[in-house]
Length: 122
Ligand SMILES: Nc1nc2c(c(=O)[nH]1)N=C([C@H](O)[C@H](O)COP(=O)(O)OP(=O)(O)OP(=O)(O)O)CN2
Ligand SMILES: [Zn+2]
Image (tube, rainbow, N blue to C red; front, side, top):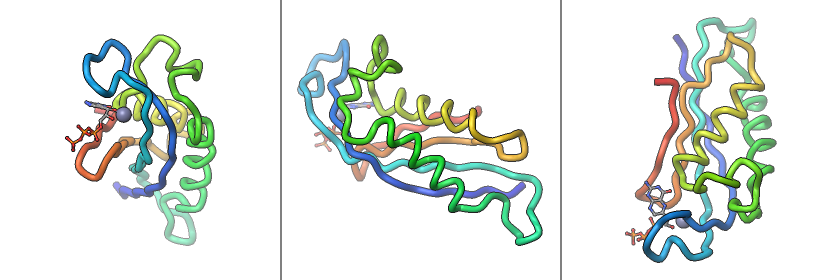
């Protein structure tokens, strides 16, 4: 199995729902996003999947979040836009893009240099 990872960023505002503390107030982050996929096969160029394709699709999905107030988006209407739930959103969107040859293994969302949450296949 080959494992590939790309990382990128988006910036957005949010406030945690049902949370008692300063994070219940409107604030923002520059989230770092790491996407890990696995493939069994390589193409003739020796690529599991072209990083360019993986980055392009990830950036397209992050475009739905970038410079938005996350709590106003349909996905977060009834769930708190925590790093955990953002990771699940990106994971599920990516799963819809690729066929079974490319397994989305995990999406890791870093909300600061020292805190991240990931959503993974298992
Ligand atoms: N498990 C989670 N815990 C917290 C989340 C989260 O998404 N998942 N999110 C928050 C808030 O969004 C908050 O903005 C966290 O910011 P952070 O910089 O980590 O908090 P501090 O300023 O307190 O950081 P320190 O490094 O401790 O100064 C909170 N928790
Ligand atoms: Zn926050």
